Image (tube, rainbow, N blue to C red; front, side, top):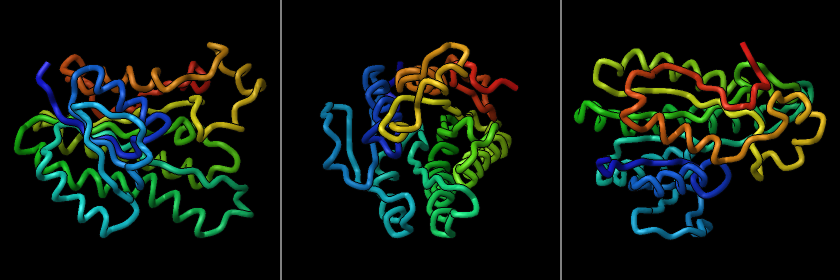
Length: 233
């Protein structure tokens, strides 16, 4: 495998950190971003860290030079937040923060890398979505809307970039054991999952490894669900 270079947003914890570690293990160079890179507790010769607030226009603009110098082949849009509440109690700030972090940032980050990929005529863009974007969840109108938008964005962009050998896909996790889902996962939820267990970050990272490889070069515009069978169309 040629040592290709990946950017992973929100790479300091949870699914993002699992993806970073897995890509490093596979021999990729990885640039992991977070709002405070000093909190990343992993060192590796192929790992670079950068501070980035995907919701801050100035921070994203400053990151453009880093992207130009790094010249990535792969982008993993992973950064995300939840601000759950019943719709009648949800504030505009709760709505705006989730949409901006989960959806608008995908637009901003993809803008930074896509010209370089077009020049190379090769690229992989993977957006971390959620089954909430397909099935919906009470108390998550903002989160579900943002993730449905990510899936639609991926399909549309895949049609624009496919002729240049750039694939764009979404991964929609179900219940994955991370600090974000602590307190959400309980026995009643597990009983509804056909595989009778929640997922782990490795379940997502292994799919990322496949999608960034040449073995996946005929897969684009898809939302691949990783949820143990909880949501079936």
